[in-house]
Each structure stands twice: as structure tokens, then as C-alpha cells.
Image (cartoon, rainbow over all chains, first blue to last red; front, side):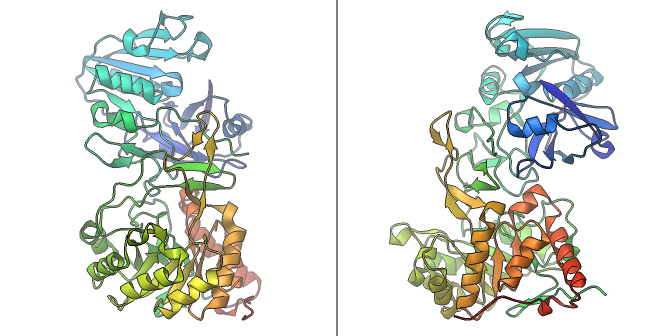
Length: 235
Length: 304
């Protein structure tokens, strides 16, 4: 897992936990790629990525001082009300992305924050943590408890989750009121292409980039949401 | 001196030749950052008479130099469009045309009648790339008689400009172009997306849930320039070029090839200010060639 930082004070000073930026770079893929904002210090933002595709390899190959076109902050982030006492953050794999900001905001709201982080195996775990307490879970038991993050998580007043859609569906089973940040293919990020459709329990679709990417878990029709996304390698 | 970029598309006078393509600009209220001073006109997201849910995800997939989409014309229907969007359009300083869709020629006509005379709606762009439910699902746009029937059905119900957006999935675009010209179209838009498919090798399934999708983006540009040129050669009415335009040079290819104006689509997804940049680039090009007006741009349009 890699972290890249960008100077972008307009975004850094206004971004909320769970919001994302849509990045474009040259030479890169045709469409921008969405990334949750990982950290912000008011001047810079950071995003996390895996070196899986050609596009992310291009991003990681950039030198300090090179420019990335950064559109954001986009979408609706986590709602963290003041006065909450306990918050559990549940992340799987790259789902760590919105959690440092969520941890910051939940602590500011007065909550004791437990971060439950899972991956398939120990080397895929994010080594950076935030919050008052950290619980690890791996599918193979190489770090922390063996099994899913959902099983490893304690009860809390507020549950915030981000990760593969299959993991989020399990979160929704246990905590219908959880706030979950979903993963979708995205075209424009601004609400016009309607490519990032999220199927809703009440019927129809809305847009992850505008009404989401954070949803009340019970509002999503999980059976109709694609559970695995493999971004296209375009060259 | 800044060159004169104004154009006339039939009776409709536009301040510039760069338009927002249907389905890439929503209802004009969403796209941030665009400098609207240079927007010639907007064609709204395609609409049916009644609300439509659209297709199941995944709806888009990136391909080399392009993207496939199968949105399924998700939309709120005519009544919501009239209530929620048209009143905003009425205050804007550029015309808004509505992209209209139907499952039968009479449904297109009914939709045009419902929207005709609504303040804020300056004209119609007919999407003839819809399946004709009454004719076993054959596409209107592939059949000159069905394409003409749809155009006539709309023409009879409105005095506003009627543009027809042609599909590239035909063996001779000139035949369709002439058929809809004869049926009363004021202009043609060439072209809509190509039908394509992409396979996910992890699942051994198509990457779009709808199986196929419309291919747009720079990948289709030379195909689109050719088809727009073929359409322009076939008719006397104006042709608006569409297909993979991201920069001024791309738009100028269509204009030289015989188009009166262009629409920018997929590029807006990548660069929300693409339309303004294309407009400004055309202006700079004309100036660099010593041309004072877009009307003076040399055209390559031999008549058949």
C-alpha cells in the first residue's frame, strides 16, 4: 500500500471524512480515477493506492513537483454528530482510505474510537493507525484475529465502514444503521454521466459521486451492487 | 480582434460552435467549473415521456482511448423535467435543447407535444438509437422509413427546431440522413455512440451488466469525422459533428469536414472546462490563420 501527497489547499481545507477526489494525470487513463482522501493537514491531501494497475503505477512513478489534476472534494462524506461516545471504524484492504479523517472527526466529536482493520493476509494490512484502540483481523490469521472484520468488531454507538462491497454487505447485516462508503466504477465524479449507479432498497438508483459514496447501510440493495470491481487496464 | 465564432444552425443563432452533448452535461446544473460564456448550446440528458430507472451496474467500462456506457436513459420523465429544470433554463443565456426518446413514433410525438412551448426549451434533438417496440425492437435509426416516421411525428407537434441524432451503426448514413431531412429535420447530429462490448477475464463475463454499451471518446474520432462528413455531403441542412472531441483541433476537423457546429461529450467527464477550452482554441486557431470569422474557415465538402 502506498501513500501519495499533493499540495492542494482549496481541497485540503474543506474536505470531510469520506469525501473523494477524482485524479487525472498525463499520460494516464482516459477517465479520472476516484480516491478517498486519506489525510489532510489543511494544505496537503494524501490518497492511498495499491500498485496493481498501469494507472496507479504511473502515479507512483511521478517525481516530486509533478502535477496531478485533482477535482474535489466530491461526494457526501460521513455524518459524525457531536456528543457521540463510541465509534467503530471498520475497514478492509484499501478501505482504510477515509478512516484517518473519520477517526479525527469522531474523536473531535467526543467519541472513543476503535479502528478494526482487516485484509486477506498480514502483509496487506495498512501499518498506519489512528484512534484509541486498534483491532486487526486477517482471513488467514497471520495478524490479529483470524476471520472477518465484522466478526472482530465490538459494539458501538456509531459504525463507519469502507472496503470491498461484500464486506460492507456483511456490515449492513449486523448494523443496518452503519454508514458505509461504497466502491463503484465512476465516470465523471460530478453527477452527469450516471455511471456510478448504486441500487437502492426503495428501488431505482442514485449516484455514488453525488448522493454517496457514503450511505446508510440499510438503504442499499446489496444483492444488486456489484461485489467486486477490477479496474480496467487500458494499455 | 477576436474572431467571430457565432453560427446559425437553421433558425437557431448560437454564440459559438461548441455545444454540450446529451448525457454528458446532465441538465446543466451539475457540472462545476465550466466557464459558460463560451457554451453555444446545451443538449440535455435524454428523456422519455415517463420516468426510467436505467440499467443495473456496472454501467461503464473504460477501453483504450474511450469508454463504454449503458446507462439505459435513466431519467425523471417529462413532467419532472418541465417542473424542475426548464424554469432554470429559461434564465440562461444559451439555448437548451431536449434530447427526446420513445418506444414508438407516436410516443416521440407525444413527448414533443408535452414539451413544446415550455419556457426554457429551445428545441429538440431526437435520439433515433432506440428500439422500436412496436416493430420487434428494431432500431429506428437503422431503417430510413422508421427514422423518417419518428422525425415526422415530432415535426407535426412542434415549430421549434428539430435535430436528429444519427446512429453510426448503419451501412449508409447518407440514406438515413436524406430520409430525415425529407421528413422535416432542421439539422442532423452525427454521430451517436458505436455499440461495443468488453469482456472481464476474471469472471468470463461482459464488463457491463447490459452486455453491450455505447463507445465514445477519442477512440471513435476518425470514424465520427468520416460519418459526419458523409452525412454533410448527403444533405443541405446543417450537420453538427460529434465523436471524441477533446481539443480545438479535434473540433476543427469536424468543421472543415463540413459540420456547422460540434458537440463535446466524454471530454467533459475528464475536464469539466473542456467546452470552454475547445471554444477558445478554435478562436486562437482562426486568429493564427488570419481568419476573422468561423464562416471563413476553409471547408472540405465536395458534393456527390
